[in-house]
Image (cartoon, rainbow, N blue to C red; front, side, top):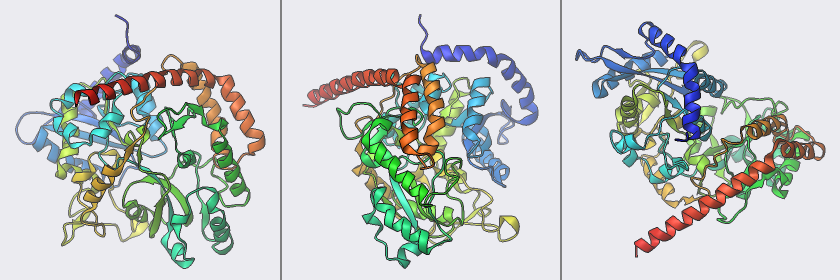
Length: 513
């Protein structure tokens, strides 16, 4: 029988894993990294799961981990080893672990498709119809539609949150009030120019525009979304069911964006280190006038907390559900876990049990937060030393399960989650939702394109490089790397996928008559 790309990739990794797995099993008894531990006073050993996620390790991570294990042990006979890896390190660390066959059970799963094609994640369909059915029922069906791969399988649990992660531009409330700015008027990159010029002149302590090397998807404003991932700059128009796949950097829309960014950089509006700066999120207290982020309803509240001062925001893209937006917060199970059922039990609790979900997000009540008279969360922060003003524990909300069972924060509307449901009901599905090209037979082209992307993208998308000279080089080297071949293959698969989708929809409509 011919092996699928996932199976063959997994088989190759097994050659590496034998020694590593054996060593880790020996160590696990000493380090608590796997196997079992005494559980809940019942005499029956707990299964311990190793869980990796993104985020800076908290001062009280071990304390929270201990409390989590106390709760999980009673509810499901499991414990976890809860490991956070910093924002700038996580993807490299995950890649190394998967390549080396390092034993673990569950992980936050960026680059979802790539890792599936490497055979890294367990197919979950059977578990979602069994022990995980509560989770399947709790998560909006559109998330499952976006998470499902071309083989029909689901390999990750999406965070049940806003369906359409709209591109939003945020500004300090203080400056918006001071200059009486109507932020709803600014919906294109070019329209920002007078504002940035004013801030540069009148507010020397503010950076007019903040970008980093990962930049920002300005192309979404023109209605484009990626057909695969950002390192493969192939896009299509979200709302056009017949739109072709294009190299975005060959379009007039991209040229306009790049010219504008270059003008802004030369004028001093964009931070000079943008092409080299890692994504730092919203650093607390940093004075920035314009910053872009993806978010849903009421995002201003969390962004204001992250910044340390009030911000206001305006969405510049429509309510479109894209494959990228629904795959932005997936948790996946290692294909080689020894405990798939227990992994699903854990994920089920994260998505259906408010006690477990709030513990992961806020920490321990009475230690990391209090509940006010309205039953809303009030964080407890340090008042002294270098940690003054910062919490001892904070979960990364979009990576860890169902939002709709979380307590709300003090100051947020009591009906916050109802507002999210109403917003989700208005979202429109992209014509690409659920499309995933299989490019496992083009690894050399993918690698070469990625190298060219890394060479030019950060500089061009931050205005740091001259567009007239560098954009032609970028496109020429992309062609040399094989982007036209890859584009043709993506287009072929896209055409087939659309035809099959229309056939299914026609059949469903006929059956419903």
